[in-house]
Structures are given as structure tokens and as C-alpha cells.
Length: 272
Image 1: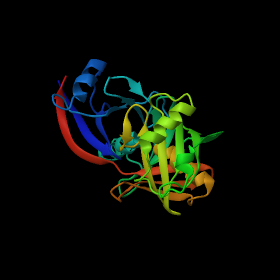
Image 2: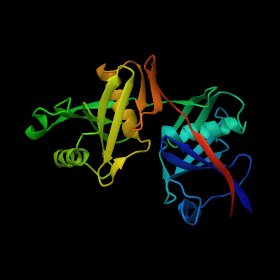
Image 3: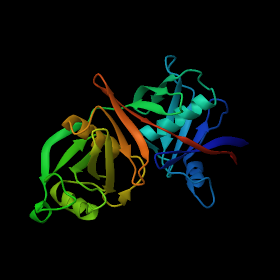
């Protein structure tokens, strides 16, 4: 049996997306692991399955898996890809879609330009802060704040306001944070630079991994923190290291939304 799939990109994350509404297949973890191989398979960081929903008031269900075949929590960039594909294939013929996810049911909106808006959970700023060593707080061209703030949003995130994300010594900062808190290997440290009231530049380092260039929860945690601190307006865009705009945040009442684009790379078939 040949199974149709779509390869997609969203903010640096590459997804293999399977439409299991117009075709049927039972996907097993060993197949996911084989498909994730870039030399012998399709190659992806995450796999998304679009499925028939379990509840009548939901438009479709979506499950997300990593390269080991383990189901994981969704990212906004996953939903940009999935909702864009559902709209392009006309599986759902409306702009506002209700999606059944792991541990959640959310409403997203597909815009005329192909971008997708996804609602975000509220971030909690912890009272605890981490003071920087004196060697950092002395006059420095890259530093803006003297404390690292801790933000809880789908995990723990350390956020530091800087004057220049390029010059920020991320490896040293990560080591210092790890010494001060019970940080696990997936803890994210994000340097945040305010370009203007509507633009942020970010750089993120993950303990045990290094620089992170694709979409992750640290992007949301840092942007929400900047909005809450009043450093930027309620509508802010995230600028990539190359200067392009990766995504936008905007607040409506008490809800913050993140909007981004997904790109269809190619369509393919794989035998199962």
C-alpha cells in the first residue's frame, strides 16, 4: 500500500504530515523511526497525523510524534503546518478550525495569506530570579538586565534581556543558570533583545544541546514576558538572525495569539 504524505516547514521545524482522513493506515512507531532517517527515509524532526476526531464538535484530530515514534506535545509551528495543509486540501472548508490535540482542544484561524493564528497558554513569571556574576554586570556592550528571570510555559525557561543577542555568551549563561537551579537537559535559556516596540530578536540555548534555531516554547515564553513587562506593544514580531520575520504575537482581551507561516516543500508517497 502506498501512503501519501506532505513534507512541510514551519519556523525551522520540518514536519512529515500524514492526512489520515482521506486515506487510512495504522502507523506504528518502528515505521516512524524508519521514516525519520534523512538518508534512507523521508527525514523529519516531527511527524503529524491528521485524523478523524473523536468528538462531533471538533473538525479534526492531530497527534504529533518525534523521531523515536513517541507522541509529544504540540508546538504552534506544528499547527501552522497542519491547519495550512487541511485548508489547502479543502479537508475543512472554513477559516476557523477546532482541533483535538493531546490534552487540549483549541480553535485556530487560517488567514488569506496562508498564515495561521494559534492561541497560547498563559505564561507564569516565577518570583525567583538568578543574579548574574559580577564579571557580567560590569559595563558590557551586550547586557541590559542584571538578573535572569524564570518563566513557566510547558517547562522552565530562563529569560535575560540583552542589548545584543549576537554577543551574548550563551554557553556561559547556560552553565551559570544550571548551577543555580535544578535545571534539566531540556531547560531553555533565551536572550531577548528589544529592537523597537514592535520587534524582538531572540537567541536560545538548550542545556545539553546548544543553540536552538527552530521554533520552541522558549520563543513564546520570551515574547510573553516582554509583553507583560511592557517593553513591547501587544502586537510584536519575532525577527530571525537573518533579519526576516518568523512569527507575530498579538493580544485580544486576555488571550495572546501567535501567527506564523508554513511552507509545503513537496508531496510524496511511501510504501507501508
